[in-house]
Length: 416
Image 1 (tube, rainbow, N blue to C red):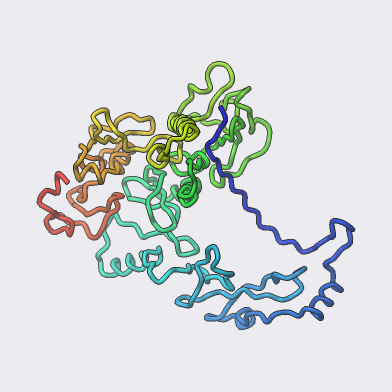
Image 2: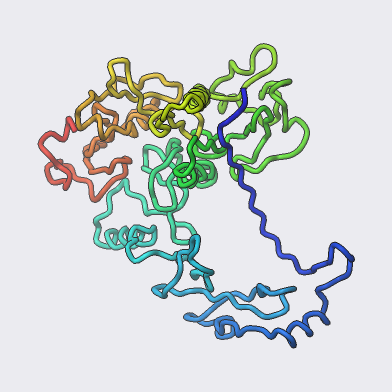
């Protein structure tokens, strides 16, 4: 069967070329004489004075000029805090500077960047209003949110640059998370959503693991490769590439049983597979839709094709036989008895985030309390103190032994 699912692989390479050689004649073009003639005949545009000033308010970076053979001087100015900047984008022209270290370019309507959240945390901490299980937000060098966020004593999960929780969650293990939870694959999928919006059929990206990193094995059609789990780049060498028509993925040097959700696909005789039930379901739907279009039927693609999670599995909220929603694990098995009946508020708001954390913390004695639909209960209690939490389980404000004094308190707080 022809593979019709789109697969996107991005490779970015930045290289500065200092010497230009004519491919037709082999003659060296960029030499001192060429630049002297170029400057004399064409002239150089005036450059920003920031590099020459180089103080607390005016600074920049000297770079090769965007002219033939880089003959002119060029200064890329650093834009200071509060100064006008361009967020870029198609048709918006060329940016003539970049934000200074630790700053990011924000629209006037944007107000939720990481630095502002940090400032709010620091302000509340100085007043003694920070909860014991609150963590100061982590920001990257651009002032955006770091790749993950943690709930102490519970779990850490991947997040977008804007601070939105995305696929990928692991147990909270303190400082070691910083070394292992890069969430590069999960963030890749989050950025791909803008591509999916304009494409008729699903765009399938690289396979992730449950922590948001790249799965060590990536396949394009029947060829599978070993890749770097942090960057997703292909790792070359022996036993790092195989053809599924001849060998299973277990023959790869990078094969790891903990990342293989369907080991039965590597048993028996070739050809072998490295797919998932969800991805197979998508392919079957695409084949059916394309056949319907050829017969002249008007098909609604958006409602006909399911969406798989970045690890290739079905979503964690599933429909039961009686059309209610239930929480399921990566293999589609129900988690406890979390359920929401149709035509209810619990049905519409169901996200199963608490149920997933509850499952991940199966060996802990201090697991979170979930609502009947698997969402986080707004009030969580631990060791005699109660606290308000958001939909991701993160503490909001100071904890209190008297639950009625919490800002999120309601009379039915125990039952959500």
